Amino acid sequence: MSSSSEDVLHLVNHVKHKKSDGVLYVMAERLAWIMNGRDTFSISHKFSDIKMQKISPDGKSKIQLQVVLLDGGASTFHFTNPEGAETQIKDRNVVKEYLLELLPRFKRKVNKELEEKNNFLANDPELFQLYRDLVTSQVISADEFWATYLPERSQRAQITSNQLIGVSGAFLADIKPQTDGCNGLKYNLTADVIESIFKTYPQVKKKHMEHVPDKLSESEFWTRFFQSHYFHRDRINSGKDLFGDCMKNDELDIRTEIRQIVTDPLVNLPAFKDTISVEDYSEEQEPTQSQSSIINRNMIRRFNHHSMMVLKSCDIEKATETNVTAAQPQENSKTKEKNSKGKEKNSVNGVTKHSIQVDEVDATISPSQKKAKIQSKITYEDLESAEIVTTSNLNLMSSERYLHGPTQAACTDYATTNDELIEGVEQVHSAISGWEPRLTDVLHNNGAVTVLSELSPGGALMTRTHFDNLQQKVPQQVHDELKNLYSAVCELLRHFWSCFPVNSEFLEQKVVRMRDNLERFQYAKLKPFQDMLLKDHLETNLADHLNDMIDAAFKKFNNWQMRRFSNRK
Image (cartoon, rainbow, N blue to C red):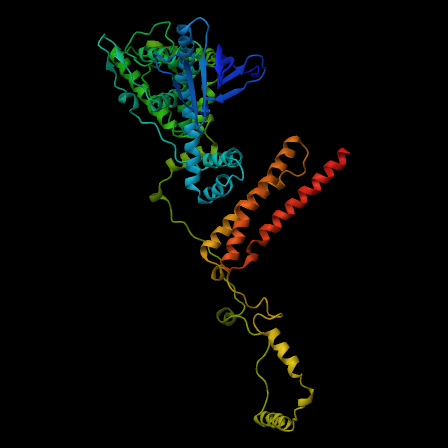
């Protein structure tokens, strides 16, 4: 039966399949039927393998439900509840509703996997040819093929992924609500808009992970978001607002960002605010501000924070750090607020203002940066004296050798007179005139012909000095097919030899399976190729190396099998 970890969503008794009574199970990932009196499922179909469902028309005597599979098969279930036709229809409709809800989820998953596989095959011709040679010819199954190549290609695609799509700065303005006719607004959120909100506002993503779907549904969460003071700052902040603490965390983000971007030791960016200097040692006194100026200031800070988060969303590393920060418990933020209470003062709408000291900013700047910045401020190029460039003189022992290069190691001037040259020529002439050939010591005719044939192109001693190019002797079509055969054989042999040493049951099953795959490939692909070479009067030894590699694998398998049987005895 099903494993203990598998959830049973619904079960229906009195369901027949091929005139056998049983129980129909609707599980989290499959639809299964078990015959009465059995402890194992007779039928088990994964939702990802089901193409569609069909029901019997109204008025038919038999209340049936049929599931059609992707491979063309089908299973029909007959509901035979003894309480009557109404109960039978009710049981069938419950199963139908479950399938209507579950099948689209797994269908999207299957379509996504098929699309990914099709993209891999379309972008890699060699992989597509390998798929045709191994899977289409039924040498190996498609699951075995993709179990090897799909994880590898997926990882490679992630490494060489395309450029990430950034976040539009006006994506919130593009969300235009529509009136529902009852003094209400309706927001149409797409997956891209939700992803942009999560990238720009990590605190909202954190709230979403905490409350959906355990405490709130998806629609209830976004309804509260668009009704919150965090989204509409002009509304009154209620104490029960779900996003009440998000503004404080945004203020902490602004403070952290200011510390990181201030690299000029001569500029104290946090000091650009209206303050009144007090002679005593009390806290800083701020001038009274009008309500409109406070609203404008908060709006500017909100715009700056929004722009900052949009820019940070384009950086992968910073986005990862933001997600990690958003996943931390709330106690960390509370601790930071508690430690900074001595230097903070609450303002209107609960927005916290932080006073950043110059010493804190200077601590993030290295001394070399400070020195370079200060030096650039106090240095004027037009007032500086011209720099004297010091050069080193080249000391040459011999200027002629430097200009003409090194002299020759040996002298080429030979002291030979014309009389000596004439005398040497006369000696050679007299020696040649007195030479007599001995024809009897020359090779016989048969030996000379044999040596000549062996030294001729194509002879026994000239095999490596003359050869025809394979591309000239073999047609291009045969050349391409031979290349594909090599690719397929090497792939099968790679899986075969990776099983050794065979030290587990899984490897035993795999090595037997790969041996059968090699044998099927030899008869399905290699032997027809050799017959084609023989028919077209081409060199039949083109496939000898392929046969040698397969025979070596068969020999290794036979030796392993003999040792395995001997150890059992």
